[in-house]
Image (cartoon, rainbow, N blue to C red; front, side):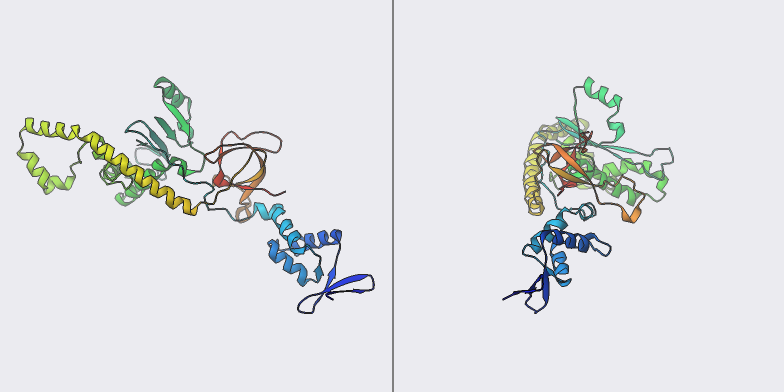
Length: 353
């Protein structure tokens, strides 16, 4: 017999012959509460909590299940839990049917130190190959921007805040341009003077996603690099020998073939996106949210908290008001007030109450 009665108290003999006091549901709840979040509670995970309770000398039939459930529903454990870096959804790529039909825009800045001419921002626009997709900078959501979009019948969409994958092409371009400028500048206040050269370097570099340089896909030919003028390359030497009429005809011939180059780049881009989706899918761990569920939202980098090192990782709970297929969510406070901006599922996790 593993159980025996001593007076009015029931004990269970464990495998190592330790006697564990059996308790009822009321006592069990009080024990778990004290061991988990009491004066000396370490807010241990469910399995560790169960072992702590047993080491303290207590037992009941649903001990481990109750400990796991209690730890999972602990509010402090949830708001201080580690941030989730695993993607919550599969990758949704933005595809553009042809050049100049879709653009992405973003702002680099506030840049410190400011340039010698007073500039503090760089507006980056990149062709996505029907809509302009911008970051949520206030200067891209101004009344003037709305007037321009209305006048030229531009469909303007905002990306989800602090979700750079949504505006991936332009975010990647930003990163590359910043890296190029960093390596070009000696006196950092002259970065604005280096910007045209950084852009030229970017436009004349083969992009992995298309297998071609941006310059060639726009103009149908490769740009002549400064070194090719100093030390003439074969194509420069040949072009110098051409008469003006012959040179113009050669340019027209290249422009006539530009559609084929763009079609090749489009096919290359589609294959590249498929590879990206497969690779991303291996890391993704789907987390589905339904309307009415309680969730916690990750604390965003722009939110200042006076607690410093003791800042929460998550805030909430909030209620899911709308859930879209692409992973965007509309959240609301517990009193029903909706957030003005959507939140991506990557920045949200389920709340257990």
